[in-house]
Image (tube, rainbow, N blue to C red; front, top):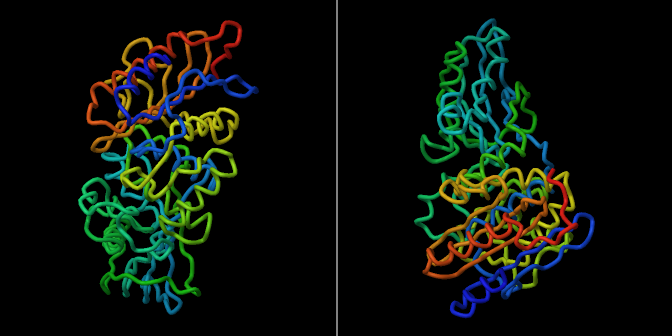
Length: 393
């Protein structure tokens, strides 16, 4: 394996690679490396960092909330409610109608319509007053930090209140439009238009719906390498970790958490959540240390690893289709001139490995040949130490 990495590295300068054998409760052992501490553009392997920041900030079982409020001046007369309704979002990236969730999100998060059932069950049939969408939990920046303008094609616009990924237009107004349709769906007619506004502090809470648990959100995000969800998570880390719903706050909080773990290197730089920004910098050693820390901390480490695709799944759907298929879980990354792969391999004897292979090159084919060879060597047990293997969990 060292020969494989050294041969590529001697002919190509843009490689940072690290492979560690994970020794249970003991310290990891380096198996092979090439300039492991050199920070490179990570592309979507950045989502490993984003996932850990979210898991450590909010917890694996965390659920986002979306809330419905009546305005403080709302009054009810029989089946008529006069006054404003406010829909306030808290960053749920999966908030959707049932039909959208079924077609686009494997059924996850299709509970937006349930937010209005309480009004219908109380007997309300007419609402005379506006529906206001409140996205103030996050800032109003629609793209990730330091993105090129055309990256808008790779992510839906960001907002703390996003229904169906804002497929109906510029947020947060589509959420109010969706709320009006949802009211009709439960038998309530609304007049008074739709608007955007902050929810008054003395508004009356009516209902709340919750997202799937964070562990499931990560299982939706990482196999397909979903940029939108990653950026929403990064803003959420800022909001829940520092009470500031911005990408910059989320990146700073995540960096602080990784420093506490002893993971972040001196030249690493976390800018966005998805890895689309070319200003991100991570070294192979950083990502390998992160994966080793996940192995040593199962409460958050196990959900992280289980969120990554196996061979034949997600962004690995055409890779590792043979004997390595069920032995690798890894995150890919790809930008112009960048291809990366980082994850965990369990060998035939049960020995665990963490690896990160970051290439800055135009030779994608050659780089991926090296990546695939490293994974297959590990899966086959070519770097195992007899008697030191650990049983797979």
